[in-house]
Amino acid sequence: MDGMLSQEEINALLGGADTGSGAEDVSSANSDVMLTPEESDALGEIANISMGTAATTLSVLVNNRVDITTPTVTYTTMEELAERQVTPCVFIYISYRVGLEGKNMLILNEKDVKIITDLMMGGDGTNLDAELGELHLSAICEAMNQMMGSASTSMSSMINEMVDISPPTATRVDFGEEFPDEFKNLIDQTFVQVSFKMEVGDLVDSQIMQLYPMEFARRVYEQFRGAAMGEAPAESSEPPAPEPAPAPAAQPQMAAPQPEMQPQTAAPQMNMGAQQQPMAGMQPMYAMPPQDINIQPAQFQSFMPVQNLNGIAPENIDLIMDVPLEVTVELGRTSKSIKEILDFSPGTIIELDKLAGEPVDVLVNGKFVAKGEVVVIEESFGIRVTEIIKD
Image (cartoon, rainbow, N blue to C red; front, side):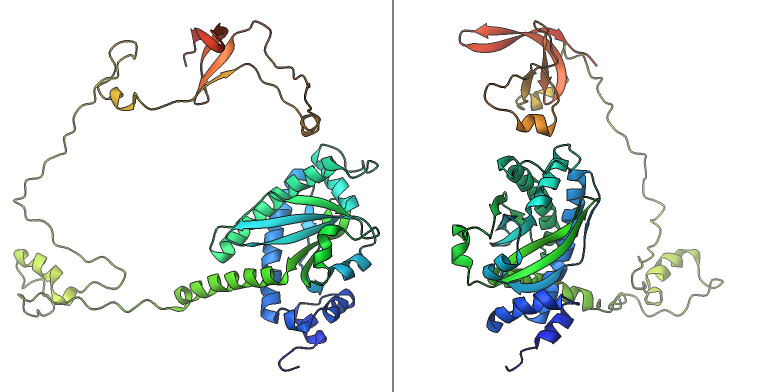
């Protein structure tokens, strides 16, 4: 094949990829749709930086140390993935809606998803007996939403364009069963597989994979390359040499000043002459102003004392009288854990920190300003203010 690298050369350029699985992936992929070494390197670097940021976000969510290794870039198809994936897994779909257009997929083992979601809900990561259900999928989607949101921020800085994603969706996939319908149209498609080793404390030591459709992978590379090319001239160009300032037309070229021969009145002209050209990057020296300029200290109008708002309003208070403020009446508050909130259902009763008959709080733009009691005005609720809170 003209200009086509061998498998060994590709593996070497990809930084020591696993020759076992990688060779199998590439051999099955059509060589006409493979990425170039430059595209593979760029995609691996983008994924490395993005997932590094995502790992920091995940460590906060699970309150554990999260380590994600340098990625390995290979190729795969759904059929090959089904042959290697012996345990059920979770596919998380990431759709890019701003800055980039396309989708990629994250693949996690079912056990890893259970551990991560248990940690997110305040557990110790050992509650693995329950079957993977909607609660697990919802929690892992929220984790991936925050992780990939952080990764999108990192990607934005790399392509010099805002990147945003839609809320992820998750599906449990067991390749040992009938092939899922949503993957049937992807059987013959070749994906770029970016694999990471992920460790979460002492609980998870597994692999997380990203699958990029080939077209989307090339689109990411093109925008990354375009951003890099746009910055290159600014880094390589040299600033133009400063042009010498022209000598004043009305003044002849002067010789070097002799302090004992020059009168005192000639100093301002010498500072502006051709012999005192400003150096590059320095401000020129200007002559002192003539002595006959009348200089006086600045005088400012005295401020009017601010009067009590219960009396006469200050002179300019009318300028903001029409500014709308948000008034909120707070019946009470409480705090719940994520686990308790996820258990909410129609009919759930939530106990607040207010006693029955106790005045409610009135807040203006979030600031506590008054207390009052609830009244009914025709068919609507209202508040009768009973106390003004003073700082």
